[in-house]
Length: 226
Image 1 (spheres, rainbow, N blue to C red):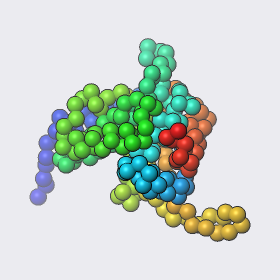
Image 2 (cartoon, rainbow, N blue to C red):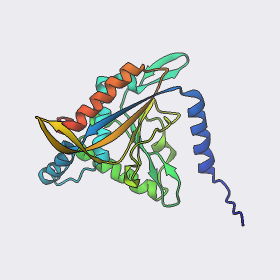
Image 3 (tube, rainbow, N blue to C red):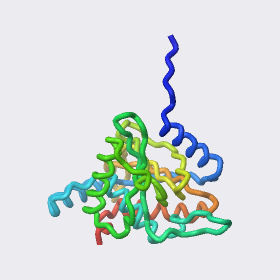
């Protein structure tokens, strides 16, 4: 027998925003595979030295922000036929609540935060998102968004930039890969990242340079907390 369930107000709102994004934000889609061996070692060393557990997502948030400092048009949006660049680097990320609704909380002014502060903020936002306790102000106006499905075994995917963001980075799962290094075959852990960015404000060449800088920070994570 067919079963039906009514759409909630939040589901309707999310659907309307995604449809608006798809219709109004022409996007470039750029993929890059990144070695994460250094990232994994850095997390362990950072926890030992500071006593703070930093997640891989926290490092992604920091890398996205540090990269945007070098490429500020990643923070732009079109307003009244002009391009405006945001004053702060606000990064959002997707969290599924216990009720199954997808929320997108925002970490404000990431460029001013240490890794430990990013970890503390993201943990608080994640907890309250899962409990449906975020305010609307905590889910608006991020310049860059991140979405990860790697924990579900997804290798890679393409995400739609949210209506209030200029770009979104989608994150796949880590995969072991054999590569030549120093004349020897070695195993590396690598992850695939796809950058979807507004073609109105950012050219594909600019986006490619930004994604390369993002990857550089992931492969040299000690630079993130300098």
